[in-house]
Image 1 (cartoon, rainbow, N blue to C red):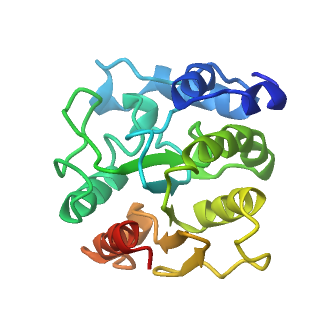
Image 2: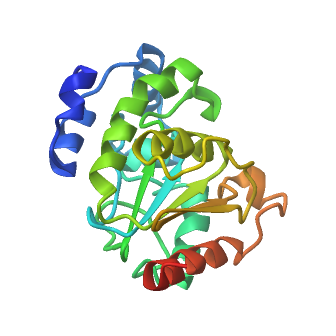
Length: 238
């Protein structure tokens, strides 16, 4: 893994992603992502898994930035594209499509023609963690990549959408370090929570995990409303 100083000097997303996918900074996550890529799920036995840190996806000059927790074991860790090929993505992308932020409602693989419109998606932790639970030390180690990507995106970004409490916490720390206009005291996470800071907006949505969708905590259309709010802010600034 590159040093924090070296990562902080990466000038653009392309250079960042080139180094990111080689990262082995968290031994537990490295071993787990590679184990999953070898053992595989029965339905994907004939596929070659990505099995590396997962870069962000979408235009590098996007005004809307979505942040999730981490790649799915048999989703992004398999396909190499965030929120692609698993149940969370099956929920997320129809909502983005409904809000006019994606050209199609499905995301099955990196060659499926999906394009995001003025929107980029990334995760706070770039490797799949066991049981979808990253340790604090892993979050902190991965934050150097996250912080640098947010810094590169800041000049054009207008709205940051946190998908879940973990992403909300990660975004708050990173944005607070990069903008003194975000309040020191963190606003409590909740679906629909929002904070305007300067000419930018931080929004919160429940994560599209099955834990939220199967139980009805996150209903069809609820995320699209958040995304529509994001789109309105990019146009009006309020």
